[in-house]
Length: 141
Image 1: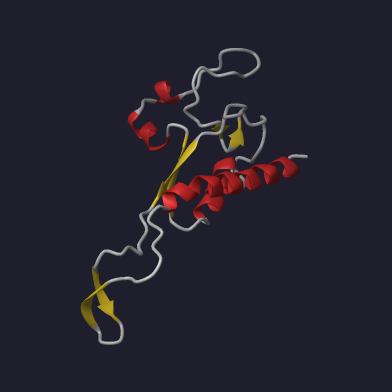
Image 2 (image 1 turned 135 degrees about the vertical axis):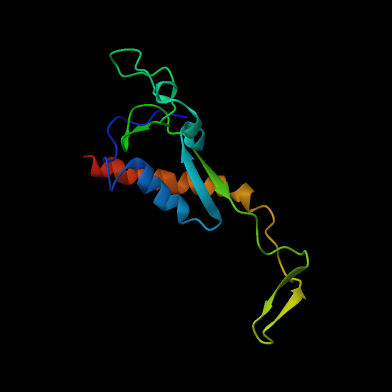
């Protein structure tokens, strides 16, 4: 992963996390996102989660923040992970409400089933992330 330029984003409404999250959650099937150490940060003391600055250029020993501090890129690589829900249209028999009869019934979905949507998601995430980062770079001019 390439480091982001320092200074992209804003502390609140236009934070890097907010804009990337907005774009990523616009992709169907995305159910979660975490940056840096993400939800694991809840199990860390602040002293361990902090990214100590190691030299005058701002280089850090760790990247628990995922390249973003206070909504602004800090010069480290951007690191985030997403959660993709399983495909709901599977060939397996399911039980649900038949809205015509008003009764619960077994049904099987006929047709094409995209059981491996998670394999397609990375390319889409890279594309929407690139769009967000380009927008941020242009806003930063």
